[in-house]
Length: 194
Image (cartoon, rainbow, N blue to C red; front, side, top):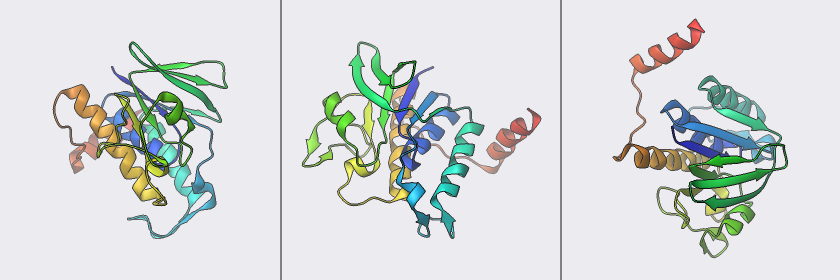
């Protein structure tokens, strides 16, 4: 099973983790808990009338946890590098991680992308529509790829795009994450039996 290491636990990182894990990949989120959502109140997120950013984040974390995503809270990533097999991620904790894919979801903090050797377009990380950087199998999302377009819903979409591209690469064809009511019954029925 391919592994995806995600640096950052805001909307982009958690959405990438959700899409990857629920579709058969192994996702690990390293989260220093520095997301802007703790300072936000969401009125403009589709489907949510009004919610405190921290409350929304709590719900999103519970959702990824329900799919078995490994979340490592209060851990700072200190370095990322490429290896022959993917990526090496160093943390301020005890264990470093290896991954086949890397998703950078660190808000406007671009230092890890720079140290990895990702190309930049001015001040932002240069990505294509799938959020892939110039470093193969490394993705950048949210505020690090956009000048002043910092919205939770945009970031979540970027995380979804990254995960769908990874899933497409793994499957060798375009992958669509589209569920029907029977899928929900199957997933939530299995969860209630645990």
